[in-house]
Image (cartoon, rainbow, N blue to C red; front, top):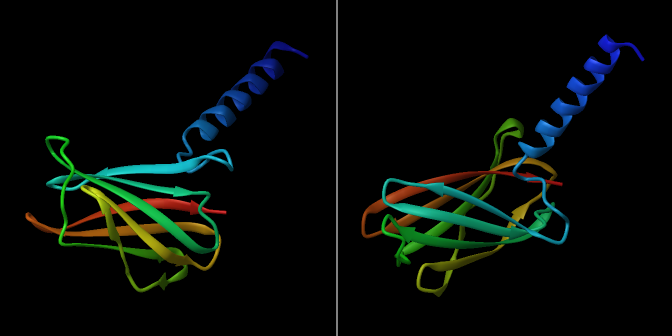
Length: 136
């Protein structure tokens, strides 16, 4: 192998490695997928185990800007697949503990890239966080 071919192979391997690391939705099949976003008033963590086509359960942790658990009047989660034009009715999350909520039976009918919109109704009004989620 000459120097030019070796260099090209190294660049290809390096780029492949970078692409794998940059995919936040790639997880081991036994581990949870955890995503985080911020709104004007809150930090929102969304957790699900092995997102898949069909019914999914999503756990949410909501904290204020000081890191304290936040009580919400209502939280809904709406799955949308923009490139296919699919939007499904929002699922209401139930409170489990202060700042912790669960949305069950959120249906993602097919594999692909989804956008999960979490709408928070709380002391600061209505705010939304949007999460990209790859479903296999």
